[in-house]
Image 1 (cartoon, rainbow, N blue to C red):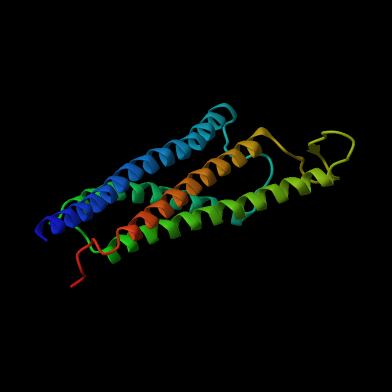
Image 2: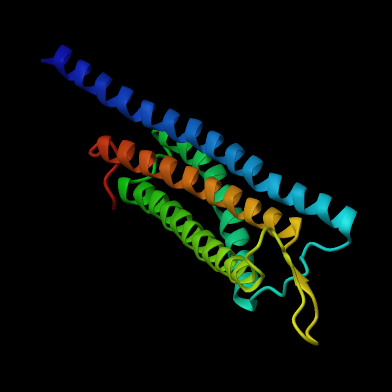
Length: 203
């Protein structure tokens, strides 16, 4: 019986150790992938600013687009920090003395999932608004080619520029970062539920 008990305890220990390694590994992977995908749009915007003196194109953007873009950047920063926290959580799970309860681990993963979902939602809404506005400009222009410069009466000229495409590229990069964060978070949730029963009971 004692040998069977040792085998069972060894299996339990291997399961919780595997979960700890998963948190540490995926936390590190998610952190760096989001840093890279979030840094590329910033680098492109900086490049555009250096050569054009502005990061906004000649079109007047909707005020809600600016607010949602700022919220999206803040959510991305939050998920980057949150994935860095996963690496520390993995070390705590591996340590039997400081191991958190299952509910605490699940709550941490749920927070990351909700943040990633919000980031995806913000990115999609901003992209829909941006593409809708670009479509409006193209439909308002003469439909005889790629005439992207538009002057109407006494109104100021407005045109589609490379900055508009840079903005869409930045949104796509942030959306990709949040989708990666969501996928990795779902995998952590799955692995945590697999190790249910191996955590200390809540007091």
